[in-house]
Image 1 (cartoon, rainbow, N blue to C red):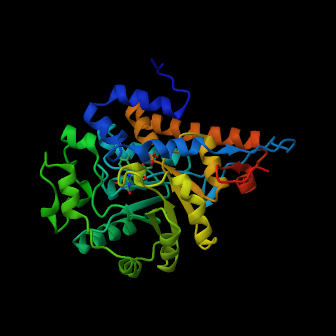
Image 2 (cartoon, rainbow, N blue to C red):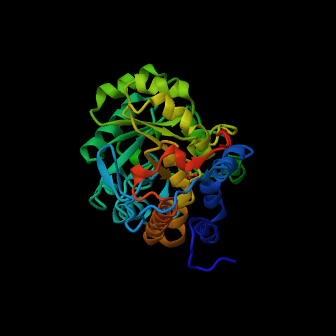
Image 3 (cartoon, rainbow, N blue to C red):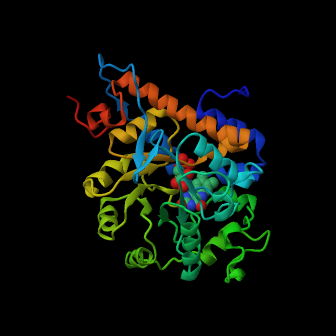
Length: 362
Ligand code: FNR
């Protein structure tokens, strides 16, 4: 049994399980179908080793970096995840304050339990907004305009969800649709689900499953904000994304909640990085639970990582303080792994600092 003083990020998972109703814990923790990808997102990191260099002056370690020009204290951002109120009554307001205190950037999910405007007024910090494309384009457009007006600095367009993956825990638990706070007050009010309707049914009624690459142009034409495309897993799509004019790519399999047997994200990171050829930043999420995971992703070419579930677990276990602790733990672990590998700053972390299973033994 775990003490109430967690020493690593995964300890928060146990605490969250104790704190949450089973339906909500399962919603956060679960993945698609047999959860092969869910396990592999984590195990793939464990197959990569670090090649430390010694006798480097590591008396000063600097984990700070920038993303789209915005300074952050470490290359660890908050991924967009739905419905934080299920974890803690202050929901995304608490998450936003914790991210600001940790001097990093939160990506607010479209499916947040507090509105774009409420989260913007919770504290002063750089924030990004995650968007889906809806069957009714006007809904996406209005959400985008609100995000712009309330000072969100980039749009994260999630493209791996033409429909919802089969999350069998949610199906078994009859997970209810959480009210879509950001849709309140829109002219298209009838797309808001009734309390108690099924999560999956609602998502599939509203998301546009006919969206194509050409449609990125439409989004590009209605905003001047940078667009990060989230959910790229192949070099083919990475090349198309760059051609479509996006400002960044997030290698993601949606925390293994969409296509089971999609590759673990860290196994395809380099493929994407090579295709992008430094034209835009590449970020990664999925299975990041340790500072060494962050180090490995950076060594393979990511500019930063995002964390999803650890934030939700921190929030469920200890509210705002829990999220802050999760972010601080990961940053401190990254700092330690940099010191022990001979990398005083983020730019010192190179490809030669890791070995993957596909590298030759020297
Ligand atoms: C998500 N994710 C997600 N992504 C997105 O673009 N919009 C969303 O609303 C959500 N909602 C969501 C809810 C929950 C409960 C989870 C766990 C995940 C995916 C998220 O942004 C991210 O890709 C993964 O969470 C990263 O994997 P880890 O860190 O959870 O392993």
